[in-house]
Each structure stands twice: as structure tokens, then as C-alpha cells.
Amino acid sequence: MTKKENIEELQDRMKYSGFGETLNQELEKKIKAGKSNFELTVTKEVGEKKLDYGLHFRKSDEGKYYYNGFDAKLTNPEGKEQSQRFYQNQGISAKEALNLLEGRAVFKSLFNKEGERYNAWLQLDLAAKDEKGQHPVAQYHQNYGFKLEDAVKELPLRNMNSPEQLDLLLYSLKKGNRHEVDIEGNESRVLLEANPKYKTMNVYDGEGKRMKNSDLKAAQEQVKAEAKQNPQTKSRSKGVKV
Image (cartoon, rainbow, N blue to C red):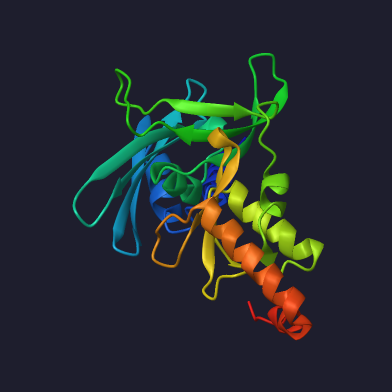
């Protein structure tokens, strides 16, 4: 592999990991300078929060450069910090790192020591750290019993009338996102996130306040009762725009 090919490969890796092309010139400069180990840094603003990333690169004895992963530090408006190092073989993207540092779970395809592929939800234990300052990573294996699609279908969602809409929702939730949806009995849109540990979905109102499942069920029953009394109400409810 030529140096040019090595640089292009690493640039593609950064782009695939969600860091775009803003670091391409700096990467090329470091490699052409023959640096053995180096770090590239980038800061992103997410609302009122700040994310600092440090991407790590290493030169092998044969002269090829490798991308080893990145450090991510999330700072909230009050100055509280959460940080973690994500390794290349975990396949975590910049956005997924944010979601993990905010406490949400991310669905990944991984490999065991025997090289066999398996699927698992990953979630950081933000209340604990090991001797290296890393948060333990909990894995909820594919056989753990949490089925995202089944959990989503238990909710009284509106405007999920096509497989494409459902696929988009599931994809977003697997990335660890909070996804906006419409729910029967709720005038405002709500936010969903996957909770594999407890094999359920977390639902939040527009202000980020957790909604109780009992409240959702009560609202759903009220909508059903109103629709039974007035069939036109049911028809109108289907027309609520996304």
C-alpha cells in the first residue's frame, strides 16, 4: 500500500465514523511528516453541550498508519463532564458516542474472540469507572430477550403506516437516538428511546420529562373510547400530520 492509498483509507475511515472531511489536511500533514503516533482533535457543539473528540493514529513497524479509535468528552452547560475511549473494533461513530455518553444504548454488530459475529446493545455504566477511568460497557446480547420491533409495536403510534416509516424509526433507535413520534391520546409529539436493560421503550414529552407507561395506556384507552362513541373522531385522528 502506498502512502497516498494509506492516507485515503484513513480519510474514508474518519468519514465513515462521522467526522467528515475537516481533518483530512491535518491527517495528511502528520503522515507526511512521519509522526509515529499522533492525535487529531475536533470540537462539536450540540445545542448547549460541547463534544471534544481526540482521534488516535499509530504507525506500524512496516510504516503503515492505523486508526485506533477516539476519545470523546461531553460537557454540559453546567460544566459536568462524561468521557470515554472508543476503540476502532467497536465500530462506534461520533454520533453514537454522544448517545452513549448521554446514557442511551446503541445496537452494534460485533465479533467474539473466535471471530464469530453477534449482535448486542451496548450501554455505558455512567455511575462507575474502572482503574483506567473508563465506564464499564454493559452488553445486552441478541439472546437477552429484548426485541426492539416488538417493543415499538406495543406503543399506540400514529402515522406509522408504511414499512419504510417503521424501518427508519428502528434504524434511528438502534443508533441510540431519541426519535420524535406521534402517539394516540397525545397532542404533542413525544420522544422514544430504546431501553434494552429493562426490555422496554422510554417515552419523553417535548420537555424531556419521562412519561409513565400507565399514563400512555390511559390515554390510549380514552382515545379508543372516544372513537367508539364517535367514529368520525377516529377518522380524523389518522390525519394528524407528522
